[in-house]
Amino acid sequence: MSDITFIRAESVTTEPRLVRGAVIGTVLVLIAILLFAPLIAVFAEALSRGWAAAVASLGAPDARSAIRLTMIVAAIAVPLNAVFGIAAAWAITKFDFRGKAFLITLIDLPFSVSPVVAGLALVLLFGANSSLGAWFIAHDVRIVFAFPGIVLATMFVTFPFVARELIPVMIEQGRAEEEAALTLGASGWRAFLTVTLPNIRWALLYGVLLCNARAMGEFGAVAVISGKIRGETTTMPIMIEMLYNEYLSVAAFSLAAVLALLALVTLTLKSLLEWRHADVLAATRRH
Amino acid sequence: MRASILRSPSPLPGFGLSFGIMMAILSIVVLLPIGALLGRGLMIGPGDLWDMVNSRRIWSALSLSFRAALIASLFNLVFGIVLAWVLVRYRFWGRKLVDAAVDLPFALPTAVAGIALTALYAPNGVFGQALAPLGIKVAYTELGIWMALIFIGLPFVVRTVQPVIEELDREVEEVSATLGARRAYTLRRVVLPTLAPAALTGFALALARSVGEYGSVIFIAGNIPNLTEIAPLLIVIRLEEYNYDAAAAIGIAMLLISFAMLLAINLIQIWSRRRIGLV
Image (cartoon, rainbow over all chains, first blue to last red):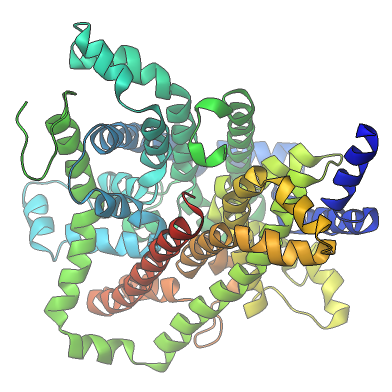
């Protein structure tokens, strides 16, 4: 009897077999066209003149300096955003104060601002014809069309990643454990390092991973603020654009393939984190 | 513990430090630059600002950015709901791979996506050659902009709807079936309304992202003024001419669109929280 009810319940809460097959087929075809084809195209174009040409183009001075710059920018912008994310999550989840909802909206703001508008805003704030920009130039600090501007632009577009990941996790974990640690005589720092940090480490890693992928690939905001000075302020995405516009297809796609590999590594690590540590990642992914 | 009117007391330390770090970085990276852009707008004055935006080329660019984003996001709304349903409810070979691949547009840099799509859809590309006999041109037309925006907006609806489907109570669908509803009716009247708030949130996020998208679009768009020139590109062109006021005028118009969308997302979330509890 129980078998019969089970089968009936199963069949009324799913679609007919034929419909399922057709839907799965359509979805797979669309995914292949929309997602897999562009990814394959990157590698196919990079290797269109063979491995040697692709590898040689990556050894060119322009490509090498672009790779170096992108890594340095990410190495500065991502940790700063992680510090911001931890501080913001601590302030927002461990204390009650007015205007919290508005503050969270402000943190989310960069997600809905065009990267080009972000770059423009930074140029207007730090550019030569603003008072702040003039002051910096008078003190021999260049921000626009220089390295600090690229870091700021990268931080802007990747701003919410870590905070967004930590806040739901820390809300769910509450304050009781830290309060218990304090009652037992731990200092605030010790409570943070030995209680909070172990609780949020996977969520933190998850946020940093996504933040890093976006940071290394940022194009619009950096295109505006970097001034695209060859060999000086050209990050990998900017270099890709330059090479592409110069019809150096193999060189452009080889550099793009490096970033595509980075994206694949990011996706793999992200999936691993989701499968292994789903219980301690942001609540939104589990519900 | 000292507590102020603005903050309730808490036994935990570190409010000053964490709040200070947060506000310092938030101000330098986000608030001051956005303030500088809006301040520039105030200096120019609303009248001159309007005159600067009110040209055929800028209106074409703004409406193109918005129209293409809307079309791509509507496609992603429908496809995203179906894809999320397939990933949660159906079992098939390669499901986990597809699930992981959905986030590819988040991880793949936009410039890389842009040149890859152009390589595929250009007249001598694989898809371009296949579509040419049908008389369909994708690269260097508005269709190409749609393709780029569909690519970058694809994950949003899937990722907001998927958790809701996982939480759906199948018993409700059983009840609906027992009461004599056909499967299609149950899906339309019982399942879809539950997914609506999450789907709309994802749609709004995708729309906000697509309106301002630059990297993936400029390679495939062809960038013909009045036809396939998107608003962010116009900002870049004005900046390259050192015409900061004109760039700021377009930037403020786009910022206002962003604010409106952020407001819409928040309203959707308040509405859905009232309707079905926490999202």
